[in-house]
Image (cartoon, helix red, strand yellow):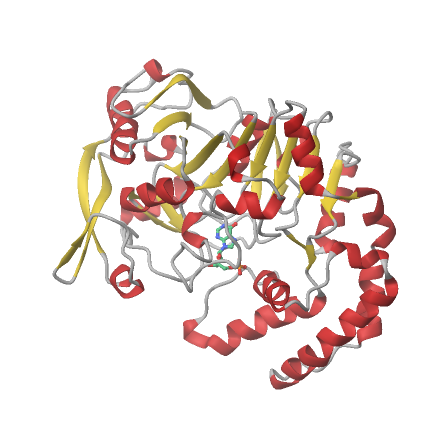
Length: 432
Ligand code: IMP
């Protein structure tokens, strides 16, 4: 702190919600900067479970300002659904601010997401079907609808009409029929009054907070390998989940960022299609899935599970300048006699120590695995580094040494308190 970015260092679902929740305790402002309701963060607080898709997890703290930055895409129906659900549990959202420049997911984006996937057939991406890609497409094509357009009905009607001139042709091509521009406009306009008290200049808000010495936490969604530029393209999402995305998606300069926390599971999971070199198809994979409860928060899909990929993790450290690692779900590995970690890839006759540049190499990559001894003790009661079994400590130390990055957090259970916060983080060869 004062400016910390939390990002996913794998394919999303690393347990960022929990680490964000922990860091949010110290923050004055919590800001999301990319993605939309394709994300799903689960937070367990005092035994109560909260699932967020769009609202920053800091909302559970009364005194914090929560911000949805310009880089986020917002489905109004989902946003206000989440606000209503929170209200029903006695939690208000008066402290939520939404960038006037954030783009809105429109009804046609949802239809086009599904249609594009059907069109791709066996080459489909396996999207969450939430309209994320088509919304970002419109943003870049400069025909998107932004939150601020709700404040000018004339402009909004014109924008929706212009967008639907093209989309309706596409929808017809996909045999979906057409949408009526006025009806679509009325549908989103219905949210204007509810949006109004939340709309703000998010960049100004965040920068002022930093000027005043307040602590700002930037909350990433998805993960490094789903990044549109640095992920396993084309099996990626349509935004930049890497740390640089926080600058663009919140309107803050890179010189203002102090720390980047990369969250990584102690193993690897992925949902959707695309290459995954350390994927397991045996009993060990099934055990990870079952013990780790690896089912998507957003779509309920079963996640693919595999060994920890350290080549990919070191790549994540590089492209985001990760200063601290948070290793989550270490407890899930308990009981596996041998743990494997990927330290290189072999593609054909080529060996790769670094994340391959070429998509084809990564698609053909076979993991070179190193074996480490497992442990049988229950980790969930461990409160400090010293409480962990020696082999668990060796496993974490191996990650720190391989990635040359300090480990600051180790999660040993789903609850907030089941996290070891290392006073002096380990890594760069130096243990606690
Ligand atoms: P989209 O973001 O819905 O367009 O989906 C693109 C790819 O990103 C698909 O493989 C999704 O499964 C994946 N994806 C999107 N959001 C998440 C997430 O929060 N966790 C894990 N995977 C995600």
